[in-house]
Image 1 (tube, chains in turn brown, red, cyan, purple):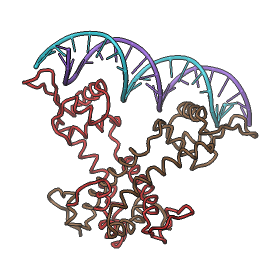
Image 2 (cartoon, chains in turn red, purple, brown, yellow):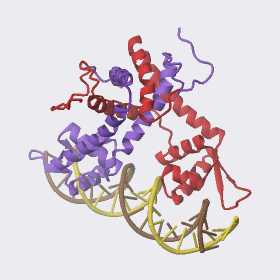
Image 3 (tube, chains in turn blue, yellow, green, brown):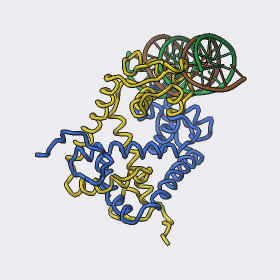
Image 4 (cartoon, each protein chain N blue to C red):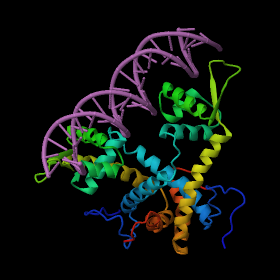
Length: 159
Length: 159
DNA sequence: TATTGTTATACTCTATAACTATA
DNA sequence: TATAGTTATAGAGTATAACAATA
């Protein structure tokens, strides 16, 4: 049985480097949240959060009906109408009617939309690679050895 | 000199476990962003993003003037007036006038505000600890060994 | 009738501009 | 005059309700 600390653990006290799940959980929550926040700050696009999120979903999940996009984004249909309208106006997505069922509209990213997403990702990667370059080899090795564990936490298949 | 891959690297191909900074950067960007998104989904409070963010800043940076809070949150002063008004109405923060300079108002979290933040953090920690419990010991060890590296990436002091 | 998406309308959030109280 | 904060007002963003087109 694992012990439960009776006093709060300082998540920055890496001298301990505990393998107690509660210690790891509290530390990882702080570290991962902060890293994601800094990464997000590197990815400014001029698009609103819902616009960039929709664009990302459209790229990932391929030609999507507006209803399917609403489900993915967990927003109401009228919001999708507006967001897609704006993205289309900006030339980032293309909307095409379905020939078989003329009620349905499908959207895909345009080359410009894909380029914008690639540019944002590259900017974040450059920031990260720069910071990684300032670490020592041991630190990079330890980080590389833990990446598949981060994926396992969110249920991502290894390899 | 490190080689630059001429083809995109699949960030999920952990069989490679490259220590090339570009590979680590691309993989970490995806993994950390996804983990933070899942964590965020575990932390619903009924408060809006700006409300929870302001409450967190007020807790962390102690008695804050409204102007200082606006700087921390990078929002305009009128937004702070509204957000703090709502948090005060909910009993999560307390606002006190400065005796020396009566133009100034300072805010602190109430016990209820602190309890709400603690509850959100605990919910995230429980989710993380549960997932950590389903990993094997080797995975937990590798993750624990990388936590200080995540901190170093965002410029956090070790220990 | 049921489904897909749009239009009408209202509410929340945040911004700029104008204002009040205090220094 | 300058500063801290509030009030007035406007522009996004998203929701529900009502509607149009199609199946």
